[in-house]
Length: 287
Image 1 (cartoon, helix red, strand yellow):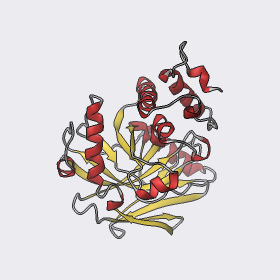
Image 2 (cartoon, helix red, strand yellow):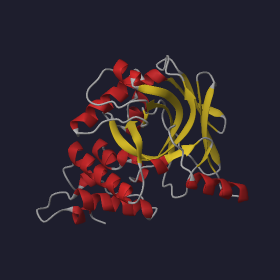
Image 3 (tube, rainbow, N blue to C red):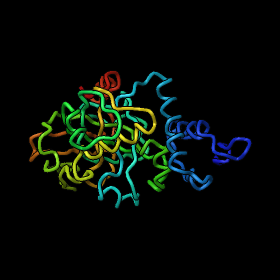
Image 4 (tube, rainbow, N blue to C red):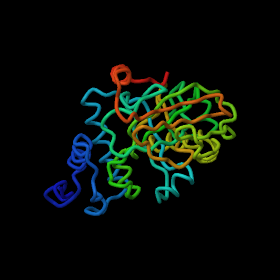
């Protein structure tokens, strides 16, 4: 496929057509080798227009907006992916999985990162301080984000990644945690019980609420706001290892007081199939 098929009569990017190609690639279980930015002078504003079209198609298919994800708020993730600045993408209800979770079918190249989720207790609109953002929250949540880029080998620019919703695929939602001392909250990420990364909540922009405040300002520029009940995952705290078949990835928060996990079976046995059907029928909610 040539991205030139996504140009209008004047040779300008057609955001809806580009979004359709991204969705078709995922539905076909394929990754894309040629970046959108390699065919068009793709600005970040263009990328968000494509992202909005992908989201509109999801909502038209019956999904419900459930919150937002922040990408690249930590130095660890920016260094791993060669990305220079944060971005954001939407979460819908079908992306939310209750811990312990099984990886849904259809994953392309999943990777997992530990994140602190913040659930809004009231509406938050416009630019604000981190303290104001934290005050609007009713709980923190132990989370794992499963990112799953449509771009082959996770080779992309910030704009390409943004068009793809910041690689958002699923969020495993774990236990509630208090809102106190989130910057000092210790987290460890393990693959099959072996720790592969450690950090604290401060890895996400100095404090998870700092990213939430940034997001509130970004959404305000687009005429949007954070709503009560929204779940915002505030960025990967460590680098993101791949989730291979037959393996499990888990995270422990607060010196193992709270945990969250996801497993990717090599093959689904009878119990796994039943559990996967229950999981697919009842997506987790941030409440």
